[in-house]
Every structure is written in structure tokens, then in C-alpha cells.
Length: 405
Ligand SMILES: *[C@@H]1O[C@H](CO)[C@@H](O)[C@H](O)[C@H]1NC(C)=O
Ligand SMILES: *[C@@H]1O[C@H](CO)[C@@H](O)[C@H](O)[C@H]1NC(C)=O
Ligand SMILES: *[C@@H]1O[C@H](CO)[C@@H](O)[C@H](O)[C@H]1NC(C)=O
Ligand SMILES: *[C@@H]1O[C@H](CO)[C@@H](O)[C@H](O)[C@H]1NC(C)=O
Ligand SMILES: *[C@@H]1O[C@H](CO)[C@@H](O)[C@H](O)[C@H]1NC(C)=O
Ligand SMILES: *[C@@H]1O[C@H](CO)[C@@H](O)[C@H](O)[C@H]1NC(C)=O
Image (tube, rainbow, N blue to C red; front, top):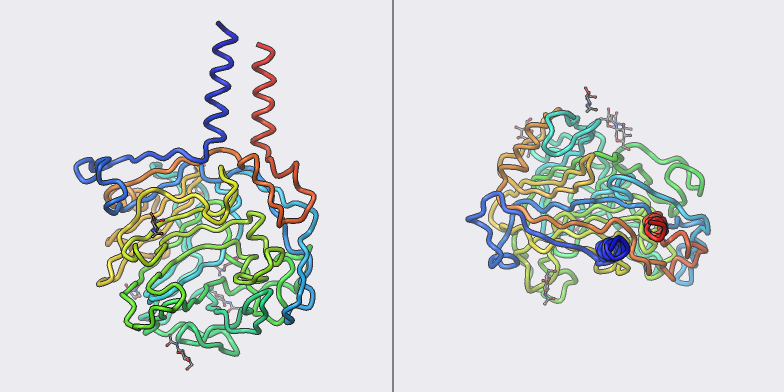
């Protein structure tokens, strides 16, 4: 009896651990969201539960012959181990915008200990852009306007005031800043990186780029006021035609290679982290903004990543306001609401109210471990065993414990 119980407990534990994800919908306003509407109407809050895991990724060790099409990159053979709440998205992040989009405001906040639902943990604003007042605190606008090579794609450059032209120095994004389909700009902090080097703070990065730190914080929040109007150009052959997005990358990625052809040229493929906050996925669902995590938490498919089942509706006719909170209990909460403000200091209670009163919520619960098959061949490093992650080791320990009951 005991043995059977142990086995079935183990089986369900194993199932919980290896099944990619479990998804459920919670409704704060049940009348608005029933199971039958899931997937066919928008929500206001997308919560990822159990966000963050124990795993590894690999940094770029060298970018050889970077400006040539025959360049070759090497990843380090030393794995970076990450662990804990929100990992690896608890590392420094850069913030990315794709058109059609115009940005009215952006803010980055940190908190000592915000947990959704608790009144502790005031949020302090640490970076801020306001288009109408042209305030730009601790913000650097970059774009892909530098040297191009097939292997690395285009290098980062300072963005000019319209977001997509290159500039020779840091420039504040103009108040009138609509960018079109497939055009992008990126926000980093205004703190310069030390010189490129594997053991330096920003790691190895592409030579000649303006290199800045991203936005740190185990517990952090980003807020945005933006428009995503319908694309007016009729050139539907444009890549990402009418597919705007706002997303976060581990800040190491764009400093080496965001759109290259060689997976060894950034830490992305080995799982250093991407979180898509508001993203149109394809040309048939251009009015739907999805949230997706791209790392190896509970999946071995980093390209598809883990997407919440429901979407937030893209309203092409108004200024949308929303953001994402990464809290101390491992919740990543994406929200959209009209009430949002971006004051210098925001109480935990205010942020709780935003989330709780925004409307309907969908919840995606993430598996605690990396998928056992998550070893990335492209990482080319000796990380096979490490890639199984602490979670798998813990699971084996649990197994051993059950064997001895
Ligand atoms: C920009 O700043 C002004 C003045 O503080 C404020 O009234 C306005 O709401 C801000 N706009 C945005 C979009 O944050
Ligand atoms: C949360 O942080 C605040 C400000 O640092 C502090 O006053 C409070 O005691 C902390 N609460 C907990 C539960 O750690
Ligand atoms: C600017 O952002 C960086 C993020 O890396 C942070 O270290 C720094 O303290 C911030 N500066 C200010 C003045 O808030
Ligand atoms: C970075 O931004 C902060 C906040 O606005 C400002 O105090 C500081 O002077 C800026 N630093 C640089 C190097 O521009
Ligand atoms: C930005 O300015 C450049 C140079 O004038 C121009 O080629 C580009 O089309 C502009 N982009 C937008 C989005 O207005
Ligand atoms: C478009 O993306 C959505 C969200 O991921 C997905 O449900 C839908 O099947 C996709 N449609 C096509 C045609 O790929």
C-alpha cells in the first residue's frame, strides 16, 4: 500500500515535472470569462506562475572576424548557472519595440520585496521616458543601424530622434515617434559598459557598438504607454507586416547578435532568456497580443517557448497602457489597464489594485524544471549534464527517498 502510494505520488510528481506546462484560467469576473470564451476573446491580465528555474546557459566567448560573412563565434565552455525566482529573466534586460508602434512613456521600477497581494514593497522608478515632456532619465535609445554581416546581423547604433535612423550620440526619441512594420528600437539604461571581455560586467560584445547596461532586478516592473495603430503601408511583403511587439531580452543578446544566422553568436539559443510582453504572433491574429517565455523552463523548444493560452486585445485606435511585474514569489504578471500612471514612487497597494481591477485574468503555471532534453546542441559546450538542471537532480533525490520508504 505504502509502496503503491509512493509510486503513484512519484508518478504524478514526475508527470507534473515533465509535462511542459499546465494552464488554467482564473476569472476575477466570472461572467466575462467562461471556458467557452477562452482563446476567442481577450483578457486583461496574463499571469505566469512559478516563473524562474534552476538552469544554465552559455555566454559568447569570442566574435571572430565579426564584420565578415564568414565570421565565427565561440560560446564559452563554462556554463552560467542561474537559480531562483524569475531566473534567468532576473538578469539585466533590454527593452525592445517593433512597429507599427509609437511610444508615449516607458518606465522601469524596482522594489525590495513586492509580492502580488501584499501591501509591502514600494516601487521606485529608476528609468523613465516621457514623449510629451521629452524627459529621458537613465534611458538610451538604440537601433539596428550599425555594420551588417550575415553571421551577426546589423550591429547596434544610437537611434536618432525618429527611432530608426542612426545617430552619432545618444538622442532622445521625439514625441512624434511612430515606427512602421519591421522597424525596431531598443531601450537600455544610460550606464556605459566597461570594455568588452568575457569576465567583464557586460561580457563580450560586438566592437564599435554603444554598449550599455540593461535593467536589473530580481523584482522589477516595466510600464508602457503606447499606440499600435494599423499599418498604413500597403506593402504587405514587409517582414512582420502589421505585427507590433514589446519584449525583453537578456541584455547580452543584442550586444552580440540579435538577428544573425549563427546561434553561437549570442546566449539566446542556450537559454539566457527572452520574455515577450505584448506580441502579435502572425498576420491572421493582428488584433491579439500574446505573452511568451523563451528559455528552457519546462520545454526543450526555445523557438516556440511557452505561451499563455489567452491574449490581450490590441486596440488600434487608442493609447494603450500596461506593463509587466516580476514579483518576489515568482509571478510574471502582464497587465493592460487605462488607470496606469508612472509616478516616481508607486505603492504596492496601487500595483495590487491595477492587477486586481484590470479585469479578466489567465494563469499559466510553469513546470519547475528544465525539460530533460533541453541540452542545446548548438551551445556546443560540455553542458550536457548541467543542462538537466538542479530540478532533475532534486527529482532523482526524491525518487531515491521514495525507494527507501
Ligand atoms: C508626461 O509628463 C507630464 C508631466 O509630468 C504628465 O502630465 C504626463 O501624464 C506624462 N505623460 C506620460 C505619457 O507619461
Ligand atoms: C519590505 O521592504 C520594506 C522596505 O525596504 C521594509 O520596510 C519591509 O520590512 C520589508 N518587508 C518584508 C516582509 O521583508
Ligand atoms: C540606471 O540604470 C542602471 C541599470 O543598470 C542602474 O544601475 C542605475 O542605478 C540607474 N541610475 C539611476 C540614476 O537610477
Ligand atoms: C543617466 O540618467 C540619470 C537620471 O536621469 C542622470 O542623473 C545621469 O546624469 C545620466 N547619466 C548619463 C551618463 O547621462
Ligand atoms: C527616420 O529617418 C530616416 C532618415 O531621415 C528615414 O530614412 C526613416 O524613414 C525615418 N523613419 C521613420 C520611422 O520615420
Ligand atoms: C497565430 O498565432 C496564434 C497565437 O500563437 C495561434 O493561436 C494561431 O494558430 C496562429 N495562426 C497561424 C495561422 O499561424
